[in-house]
View 1 (cartoon, rainbow, N blue to C red):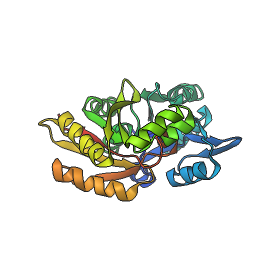
View 2: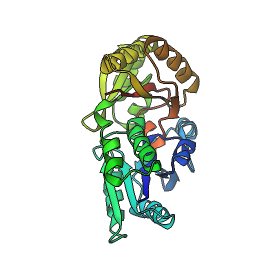
View 3: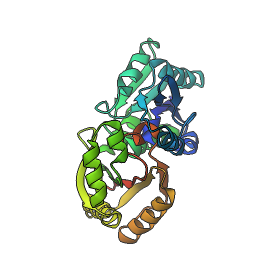
Length: 283
């Protein structure tokens, strides 16, 4: 039985990594006025923030239409899949899960399972990778689902946000709060909580924020080894490399650390300059 894996681009999976593992990526949409741009096809983080800074306008985001998921399902079945499993960004953050479910109605009698991961970025992405690795080994549907699901409680997401400028532009915080935070050099640390990205702490200065992200990651891991790690960033690749060096000096990093962009449908809600880490600990 052949199992095929589908996910959305809010998983932050690099296209080449997805292709290596046979994962189909369904693009989220970023919309500037009447112009719709597909993540990973028409726009990336750098292009997104160059346009925001140029036009001084924040775009909106939209979940993929059911037809986009239907295209991915159809391609999988056309290539011989018996089963399709689709992993989606948390339903608390997006309508993606509902859209992926709606697409199933176009395939009566076919075996499609849609999973609300209640995660985002590479926390979602690592679930997808675990599923794809099992599928490539020829595992049955139930084994694939179990392997991915088992990662949820061992996944941790911590990122430092250097500015509230973009949150103020989007209306998520008042401009005076962003201005005050900027004057005081306050940098929020974000985490995933109850299916949403939420503020964990507020720290002064980038140096202290990075140090705190490393500390809370170490606390989350406890005595367990870190099996998987991704360093994520938003238009801050050089900083991400520096952060990776710092965290790997402090805690035991796996051999293959993945460097990823957050991707536009997520980064538009956080802003440029973000750096952080997503880890999966041992059992």
